[in-house]
Length: 559
Image (cartoon, rainbow, N blue to C red; front, side):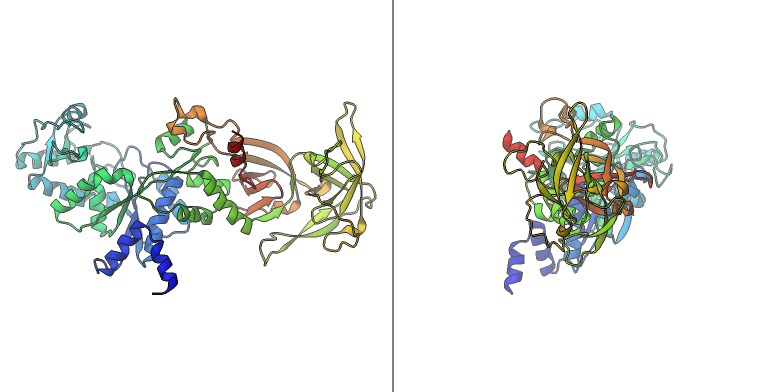
């Protein structure tokens, strides 16, 4: 064994250890995993971890992954969610072996239920949901048998057939597994495996009015597909005995369930119910709001699939839940964007600069690298003229010592252009600075500087006559506390009021008119940005993906 493979072996997570052991022992010739979302909402960053794990394991060990939609609740599911989920998986960089649906197996699942009834292991219960709950007991007290528990096999078969035929109303009857009402595991106390729902299904229409519960459909669907490693999050540990019980009693392919820690991340919420509240109550603009932890929201904000895959790889696969700092996700993002983002100059709060000794009306095209981090970078043309905008914060009339930006009598370099000196400050009647009059050093052109002048400050700028107007949306963390779900009171009261700031008019270099979907930009000294879907040829709109540095870390140190 080589040193490299020893290192790889040391770094295996517990699921990889199981898979390698299974393959070494010949338990399976190849592995088959699955990603089984319910199409009742949009995927979020927590699902991304599961996607990366399931597809990543299959890729690593030469196996395959099925995309299976757990569509057993017609009331909440829709093809809109199906399509969004497929888009998200593809965007993350994965392709499934088979696109499958739990509804593909409704006939099989019905037959499995009939088999359990025939074995005396399932019965039709007429009790209401309240009555079933009252008889279930507590974790420390055993439950009590339903008065319908000992119906004959023949009566149960007839009633179950009538349930399928639509002869009963919603909630009038359910089918329950007959296991053990005294089990210390509450999930084993005669769980419901079928309920009546007269609702149109997004795929099967009105063909069915009875639908299997998740715990019944899950393991059997895995078995039908011959899934070798069924990977779930930790909350499904108590469900595993039931998963195994159904497979054992039915005598079908023994898929096995393994559990890992779900992703919990700071400054956001992962609960679908809470995310839905944010959408429905108008706290965000929709499921793809760039502040949302949904994959569609992250994509719209400008995240890259590479950065999300890197993040999921870094946090690893654990057996214990923990809270991951969103700063790690932002670090992975900055690291990738620094390598790929095109550099552009955009002025947010303009202050006019007139270069008095530059030829009037002349426009000079200067060359600048698109990305200095890329050895194969291309170059773009930037127009330079005698009238420019710089950031207002880059000028100070009475600067402190070691102030290296523009001030009266002081010199700075304009990025990719010339050194200028501030000669005169123009003000309005109220004393506000309105314009700076400067001179430039012709011999100081970037890349050809023969002036011998050294300056410590470099500013970004745009030529006024060629500048393109745009809107920028400055997104930040949606919640101002680390774990809003665990704080007292309504989690929505901890929403960060500064999570979105809109600057309706900024001035950009003209190269940004060529911005397209999927392009990533670093606005020099401002942050990383991406074009938003609201953009039009007449009005460009850019979202701030992430700041250049972790400003939140500084705030936490202050507090």
